[in-house]
Image (cartoon, rainbow, N blue to C red; front, side, top):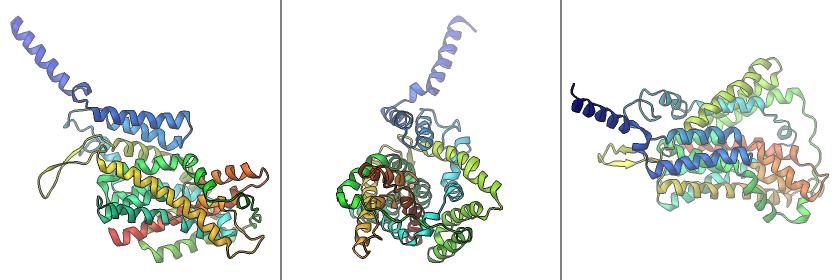
Length: 401
């Protein structure tokens, strides 16, 4: 090989190497999404906003927006890649039920069992889901299935949002999941102003009776009865509610401590890592997909007008859910005698952001009365919200899937 031939050979290989680098494939969209990922990580570390969720999601967003040349089988949407296999847990919907198993194993339903009427607050908060569904339909931008998947954001339940979107609108899953987890992380920012807006100084000082002691028999029977009652009404909620109540039975039975510890510890931690990382990685800035009917290339990436709509509707649904919970408590108090009234500051806890919403009830309550502890009372509608969002998901699936 002569000198000129060697130089040509070298430049050809350097050009080929450059073609495969991220620099050669970089677009403004990649840069925007990488900044979004960095913002998530910043909020998690600097502001302590849901770090167990936002750190994996934020890192996943960065990972999913590293530019590369397709065909190397490394991308999350490339068949046969390692990332695509990990993403199957999201696409096929088996990560969310495992998360619910862990949630059931770590949840104490005693507050709800001792005061069953508080389950109505959790039910009222689901107005956020159906309200956002109706608004999304009214925009004319989304189909019925897409609107249903978006509405579930109002439940403030990330795993349920992922499960529903995997069934109803898989092409919108990234935007829906990121929106759901974003608003879950922003509970301390969004809910307090609404709680102050819809309550009076007198209502904020209402003292509730201490929850009664719940027997072990009641705790063991609750997941079994709860399973039968909910799933006979909405069988389509079986994957989520079934695992939730099974996890709780493992906890309360007293004879399966090792299984309960595994479900609420290593298992839920592993699944949370995989779920967060792959959901984040699925938010590619641009992803051109061929329309099977027209053959036309359509952008199903994250940076589309629909994503902006989803974030806006997510905020609306979360506001409706929080407001509905608070206002429903005020409505209940119209029929309750003095001494039995409910402090409406626990109404925000009807969304299923456990236990953050209940903590907000406690914090805001203590601002107005340093001796009025609302945490245990707020945990009742909070855990009811977990059940309620799964039931609402089952209802949506039953007529949209």
